[in-house]
Length: 310
Image (cartoon, rainbow, N blue to C red; front, side, top):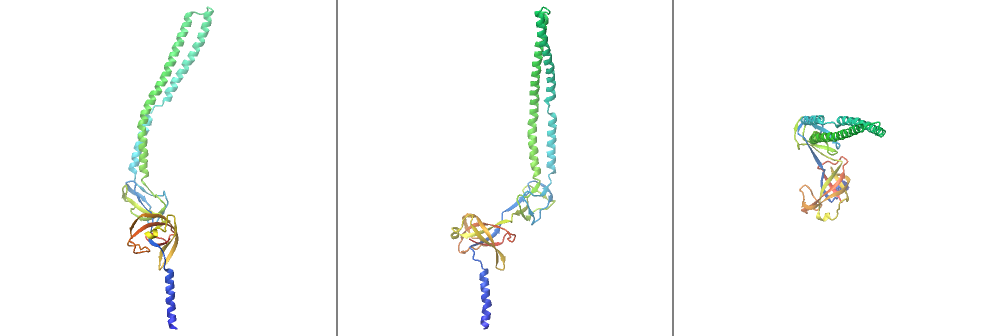
């Protein structure tokens, strides 16, 4: 009777151990697409609110680099543009003056035309002389010449002013582009999160000096990560892109958490088995890497080992 009592606990332990043992096809490590955010401007970090573990959203401003010198450069260029604006000539006042003169001449011409008609009628009745008519015709001719000169003056003034302003515009155009370029440099003084994700590592502190290209922090989107596993050549024929699979994360004490995964990348080149990875057939030297996309519920951590069943 004592033998049966000792054997039953042993059998129960063996059954439990067999239940906890997974029969999977490959194993690997959970990874993510990491982004290193670097400074796009040189200067002192006036504000830098990033902390490891923070969750950032795409486009969020998390810091500012001192760009006061660049702002002063932009102000100087804008002052130069404003000075050029003052040099421009407005053609409207000059044009209005000549047009008023034209209106007076046109009125005088109409008056002389009426006087000519009246004198011609008087001449037919012998109440006027030919000289009076000739004087009126001469006056009309003179007024027409003055009108032609005034019109030419308007065209000449417009041409001269246009040429003068065009020269100023040719100087202003490059300056305005310089303002836009300087504004771009000012905008780069802001440290902006390029993606939504979690801060993994912080490389800089507020108040430090930074330079263009210097790493400030590293982040990754941990909502969706991938398991990079390795399969043998024989297993390669059993999988395809877009194939749904089951992924298991090791929770310790022979416990595993199951997730739904999808194969989204298969390497087209074989490589030697990494020392830390054991495939189903450990004797295979050459294996192929695959990446499986998994929606993370927060329990999967980067660097954890995972198992996959096709």
